Image 1 (cartoon, rainbow, N blue to C red):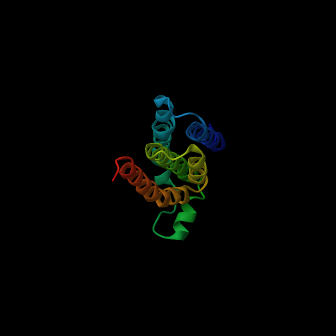
Image 2 (cartoon, rainbow, N blue to C red):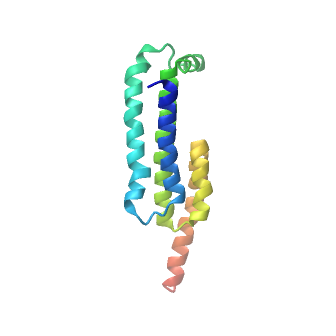
Length: 149
């Protein structure tokens, strides 16, 4: 399988996970497992294979920006880097969705957060991390109000 075919395969696999995570109902626990765990585990296994196969034979490294650039000029190393992003971002998206559901955050509010996580991983996580404390305060306030405190 060529690097282009591998790229298409892992990208399609990750996209399926994001579609399930963002658009399908989460009342079916097995769907959550597919997008939040199963697909990231498959991607992690592929990543591990790619690292074992290509990382040590590629020139470059992580000690300078120039070495990182050189490392990613090798298709196998670039593909491994891409799979790393796909696996980690989808896993983080799954954790965000799980916590957002537990907080009672509307799916309409979750969708843009998850889309941002899909496109720009850390920015989506940052947005959720800034919203989560406010949601927790609202939950505590609602609990105190309902108990007559």
